[in-house]
Image (cartoon, rainbow over all chains, first blue to last red; front, side, top):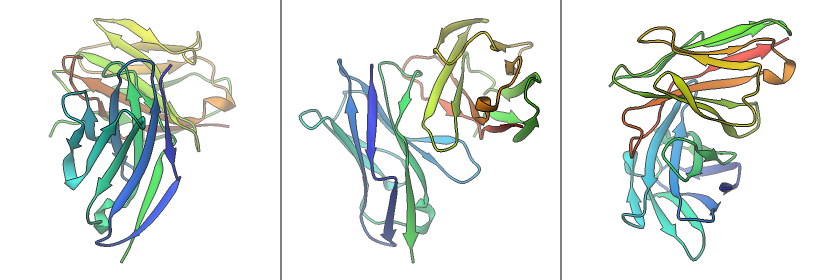
Length: 112
Length: 114
């Protein structure tokens, strides 16, 4: 079975600072990996997706994630945080495109 | 941009009652899904639906649950006899072709069973 572990349930960053959200996965075969964002009172929105085409994946809103097989990691980064990045972020793993196993989520707060 | 819409946004029901959660997927999508998130826990896959039948379901999706596409636009999740532990946020999602097509999630229905 596939699973992901998100390290840190809460991350607080200053506006303009680096955002780093950590995700480690477990899968017996090469997986699909995803990052989703959830803004208050909204659904889950896809930020980016890894499907083995390239190890560095660029997503929306300036986010990117790097797949590191040796570390079984898929950490999400953004060079400069904006107030609008405050949300909950979910890492997910799957062997296909629809049956996702989600992490517990990381809540990001951005300080002015 | 087309959206998946879910109604109601919040549903309160008494234990033992039947509840139907409604979803309108994106109009040209063919694959439909339900996920749920119990407060403080992970988002969990419940069921996938294609061509008017369930294509896959999780162990959570027992006989108390059913899904239906009653017409060309709605996709519903029914819980026959709700339990306290069914209280959760339920997310509907849809995709176009199923392959290499991202999930589009609705905003969720918060179900509270009292």
